[in-house]
Image 1 (cartoon, one colour):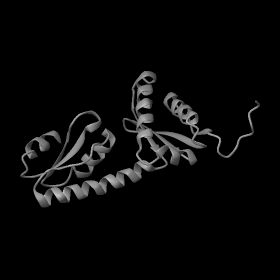
Image 2: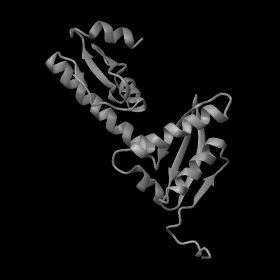
Image 3: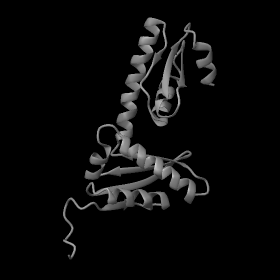
Image 4: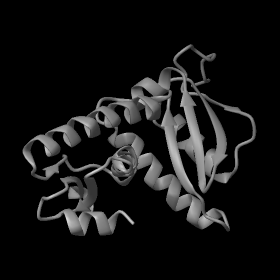
Length: 177
């Protein structure tokens, strides 16, 4: 059957600026997910290549738990290793969700720090991906009389917020250096 004219919900990606091989990969994957139209831009920040996805598809890709974004980011990092000599870390930011997530994690970090200080006991946060753990570590790195460390393995790895005086404090303050 002949292809119909483009509809508003056609899953077409538009590159905003130049995209390298990893950006082309992300564009193709998201188009094949048939989530609707979107725009994709590429920027670099330090050792990171950041791909920002905006438009109707971004809301559908983001969903509620972020697993689809994490999976896309994992695949994009594999493509980066295969396609690029310097193999930068890839971050997929869906419609500014990264900034919202960082704000939310910052608030979570502050609540855990307060609870740890009040009780004098370590507080373990729920398991989270490495990007989210890093946000928590960075949010609390300058807090006095408090240290953080990651515990567990794989997908069950979590951040432990440790107040001074808790049994894990020496180990946590060493791992922060």
